[in-house]
Image (cartoon, rainbow, N blue to C red):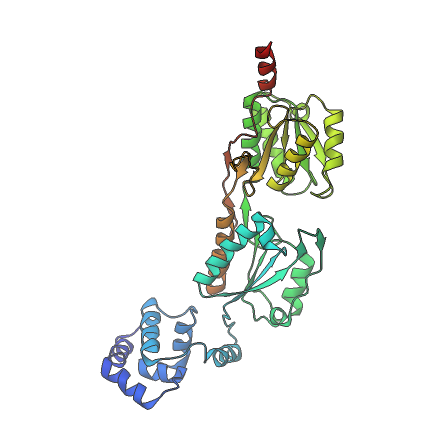
Length: 385
């Protein structure tokens, strides 16, 4: 900023000058702020709206003058956006669209993720437009219908957990006012979109290493589709652990594929019947691991004496009689996953042209009471004799 402009700002922001403006105008406009700053409307508008092309010093001083004059940002927001559109700029509307499953409050994983997203968005002064994609409680999906506000480009970007295809995104970009507004995905990637991902391969390696170190050599693996992400990554991690300990993945792992999480009982019963030598079970999420524990107990089996069980995400507890969580699980910071998605999307919104990058969150294995040595029961029986 030039010395003349700086001097104008310094003079205008003095107490006497501000008081005079307040006496003259009660409805302060952008032009009033520009006049008080000694600048044209264009750089003042950019400074107030976080656009590029103005120095940090100018932004700070313009916002100080606007505050002291009593400039009402919300009251002038519509005029601001229309003005920016006329000049070919993309205005920031401070609204983010979120595509996630419905009934968030009933699913710990999604609720924790939503908490991280909403806290980050709120602290940055943005609002949230929720676009549900399917119902994880009633196990039904429904097509996403983008409201006119999204089609017109009145949301600044999207956070997507599920429910939108690459074809739908391409349509949204090419055929509507949404254009090239940024899209950030969570837990699974999309074409040309940055993502927050879990390190699936390392998490799987940690889980398998744990079971192998205990002495397990025949292990059930519950999955929906072993050939798609993220389960193909997990299979690679299981293979890494087996290779490091001289074991064969094909000999250790017993696939147990299911169509839906709630259709677990029959496949699990058949697996137990057909593979009585299995001593452990790896689940693709905590709710399925917990459902398996209860089904196994219903079959007269003890956890972990008859079968060790390992979950994924560390989102849900398997409590004992005192309420203590017994479930060994691969832990990820789910709240931080949501925060990272929101924070990075806002960064892309407020810095046009910035390239988004993938963020990979590391796992830890939380060992609890649902996993133990497969020889534990044999030892107890021998000692009893």
